[in-house]
Length: 313
Image (cartoon, rainbow, N blue to C red; front, side):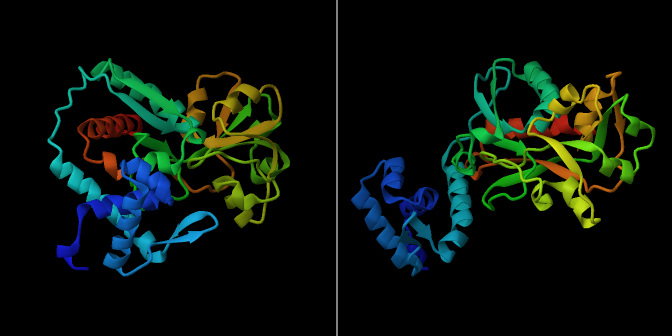
């Protein structure tokens, strides 16, 4: 590509087209006419010698070349935005900014009590809007409509920035009257009934399939690799629910250790190690390149890292 033929507006056009995959919506987002954007797409095709977007029944489908370009274009635009925008001083104690953070129930229970306490000390006028994974999409995060997502992710678009908040293991919660407390070996574990709890990633979830262990997460995958399968009686997406419903019954909940430890002073509940190996997992925070250089956003990320380090130190 000849750099002399390049036009910064064309990169903005390409970014919008790849996000929206619709000329009309992309033009509206850019505040230009549809014919102007269509002409821009024509120039982009000539510039990259590739169709980039092809009409299909679903709308405009990106070519392989376009998919390769998308994270690179987003990163270039982010860097240019950082260069052109003057550095704005961010004073936490005076800021009234609203931070919108998507957090799993797990992150809310383990990270957010300490995070909110710290933020109230440093920035009492800041508003924190905590969204659930079902409230947003990857597109919302990519466009910067949501400041950050904190969860466990099976996959993440390459254009996003992400760091590990911490690593966690798994523990079993049992009612103290459960006979399995006396000797929780693998046989006893498999003979028991279980509470499944998880909510990974972003987006609306669907009903679980107990006959498909590969889709149930780390615990059931670990058992499947051993040739075993547990009997799941209850499925929930909320990590606080098992402690509330485990009651005086024979159910076992295997859930992240940091959540289990929240019940350490509950006299009705016993916390035990699983009778088999389960790989650790990573809690991550992810954000759009559009916010990567923002001073307020840098402060939020730094504060989260500091709080997480204190909780795991």
